[in-house]
Amino acid sequence: MIRAGLRARVIAGFAAGALALSATMAFASYEIVRHSLLGERESTAIRAAYYDAAVIRAGIVATADPDLVALLRALDTGENRRALLHRDGEWFARSADLGTTSAVPAALQEQARSGRASVQRVRADGAPTLVVAVPIATDTVFYEVDSLAELDHTLRVLTIVLTAVAIATALAGAGLGLYASRYVMRPLVRVAQAAQDIATGASDARLDPAQEPDLGRLTSSFNAMVDELSARLERDRRFAADVSHELRSPLQTLSAAASVLTRRRAHLDERTATAAGLVADEIARFQQLVNDLITLARSDRAAQRAPVDVAGLARSACRERGLPESIVHAEGEPSWTVDRRRIGQVLGNLLDNATAYGGGAVAIRLTLDDGLGRIEVDDEGPGVSPEDKAEIFDRFVRGRAAGTRGGTDGTGLGLAIVAQHALAHGGTATVLDRPGGGARFRVDLPGSTA
Image (cartoon, rainbow, N blue to C red; front, side, top):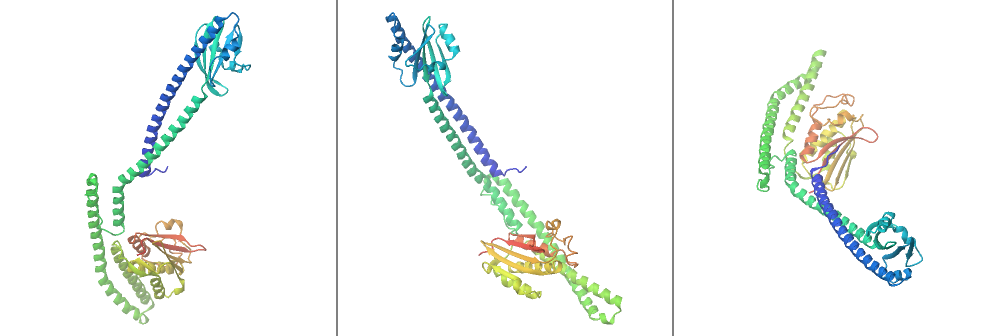
């Protein structure tokens, strides 16, 4: 299960809190308004029903044979109220349509016949309705059916408004959460940026304690950690450089002696000549290893960027290795803002790797788009297995396919140097499958535009 980021959780928390608060207030407001409006409407309907029942009672008492329909028509009930009269088991209404009687519940009729005035809310014709029963005499009950459709519409509108307000409040809470998360995350962003600068070789990157007084302990601990890390890296770098430097002198002596033996191989017996050749090859490999170690010891320093004609640098690397310059394809701006020495070594190592393990380089593509410089070197070898792709840029790793890709015995540091130089530029080094077979080594260099 993927856990949401801190910023997303802060925004979601603010939004959920705002939604819960606004929903609670909206529900409480709706209930209060609903009960208030229904109570007021019910009181009004009861008063009107008692008044109309009194009018009907007076009309019945005034004559021996009253015209009940005429009495009902004389009532001022408006558009929402409908008057009914039940007398001697017969229903009377203002008009010939007696369908209104179906809105009167049987339970309410039973209570009214027992002499008790009653009120009940029901649904008639799909609309909420209030039915008021007022007994007039032993065998006479006055009913008034009051439609609450208008009140129901008002409550629906109120529901929509309160829902919209709750949603708007939740969105406002999310906006506030976004602002708060940015404010809270700002120190962490600075820490992340400082860590990234340190990773790319800027060992002088530090946090300013005055910017975030509340995070003074974090700032001081981070700076102390960086100081200790920088000191340790400097000790390791110095140690590697000193050891490599000390090895150079005896290696030069051995190389000179091996050179003498190599020149005199014709005067040596076969076994001695073979041994002399092996010694010379191993000394040359040892010298390359020492040079690579010195390069790695210095590679964690910051890149010294300057405008560089990378296409010209690639063609020069091809000429030095006897490769055709036509394999270089450049797109975009010809001048990149990079470290000339590092990028020259990146190109050289990738070409040497393609020659040693990939049957030779077949294409070098250089593109610069929106500040991102990209170097791609294609070879026509067997490619790199998925198991090796994850670790091929590690130190002293040649990959399981190294033997089948060329049979040479390199130092295992060439691609590690490529990755270090890419990291010094804030970039990455990756290996992909080349369409049609082979491997494609890609180096991305952000910030390559001046």
